[in-house]
Length: 215
Image 1 (tube, rainbow, N blue to C red):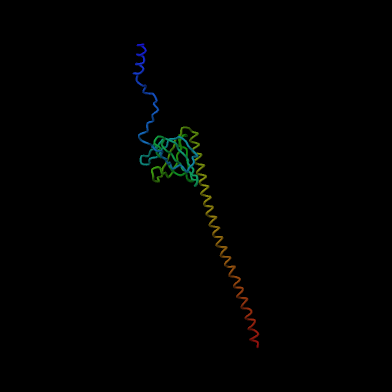
Image 2 (cartoon, rainbow, N blue to C red; image 1 turned 90 degrees about the vertical axis):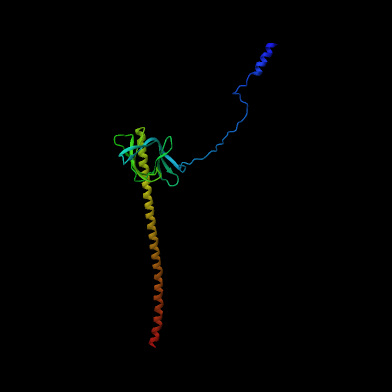
């Protein structure tokens, strides 16, 4: 019996397990609310997304300087159809290139490195427009070729859009001129019958006067 009572005492005096789930709920000290973050890319669709490293040519130092490593994108706007090149650094997400792909933009392979290519652009990455000479390097020759082909294709498509706009505006101008010319012709035609009526109204008066003069 004594041993049994001792066993009971040990069980009663044994401390509770600290990891035991008591079922109690502890409310957090600070409640964090979900915040929506806008990137400025909500109305754009990515048509190209490649990892790369970007360089900018420093005119003062006459050398290439690394701008950042991350993902370069070509984003097409849903409404305007314009395409811009956007690149952010992988860790900080800081913008290191941000400019439109214009019809005049051309990409060329970097001499001596078939994984890199260069191009000129008016960039807005620093919050102001700057003429920059960029060089971008990819992990493979295939990615570099894909980038060059896509940029060239976009530039050509933008060029055709500009030509279509010019053709449309020219057609509109010609149509406007033709409408004005037609109005002028219609006005001239309206004036011609009146002149005929006046000439006809003068003839009977002359016929009436003739018999009077003969008497």
